[in-house]
Image (cartoon, rainbow over all chains, first blue to last red; front, side, top):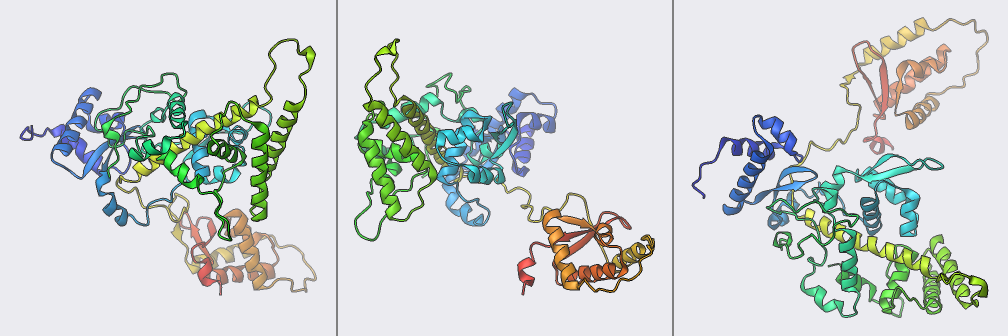
Length: 234
Length: 259
């Protein structure tokens, strides 16, 4: 396959993805390339991915925040991290993650509903999340006081390496996760596969991810639990 | 990842001695879940008396350690005690429908709900960790100075002075008689301008000088503005030549010049 000639389309799309600093959606790519349909475009991207894989390139094309983007492979994080030392954002705190989780699954949601679930005041946390552009105001609820409704942003997807919000594990998956760790002897099993415990997104996934799974749990258990593409780099 | 970190932080019971390391709880529900998990209690059948005791014990410990016990923790303590007392009361006989509600039910629902999102947060953490291993091309350099999008022109001192002259000429000559008291100092006007910029972000030159039309006030305000420019506390910009002149605060150098 390596001697297969590289098409002009591959070059154009590669150039676009290489030069872009944000994910490019199928539609953007289609209008930029011109004279190409969606399925052909996806085939070209698949071909590019194959090529990067086979030739052992240090970069890949991922699906993130509703588009395609070129990025480095996790294996080289050690070095690139140093390059971007002062660019990497600080990690989110536990309260921030919990609040984001509630917003992600319940959006749009008002502050008092989040506080009811977490059992604590979250005013400061919301402010931080808004400042970091991980959440946004989605309008006002038609209720007394017309409270603000919050939802997640594209930046949220980007930050967590998700393509779409439904890439998050469903409620059912979360429940089965909890049940799995319910017995007392969980410690042993957890140590063996630390990361695989949590269905994460398919980062660095080379094939398009499975059908849409909604966080509301309408279609549970579709996520392949042993997905090798999800295995962490190190 | 999730359970192991949870166990490692949670199972370190506060050791005796001065070096106390209490697990930090995000809130009362977090603390309750910890107690339930630690004692391997069935979340659907919580021994309320025992858990209340342990919960209060924990609050007591937090207070002894002079940790801030947030109001939410006290609310939960009250809730627990209310449930406990409810369970002690004999069931009313005229309960009619057999659907006698377990007083714990609402709490259990909240705990289950909270636990679900706690797990979701752990999954987000995993996502975060993975996403931090990959790097994309950096975007446009971060906007360190979120100055207006429009192109602003540098205002020269001469333009500023001619704008000042213009204002002095055009201001309505009021018949003011005895103005003697020198109530303005340059220092005062500097503070006044800086105060304005605190609340307004940008102030128009005309508006600033028009705040007081008496010539002495205008002159002193103008001098104050020049002084602030000199010590780099403000910058002046205009959108078009001969356009309105705007005064902005210079945030970056504020500390530098605060001597």
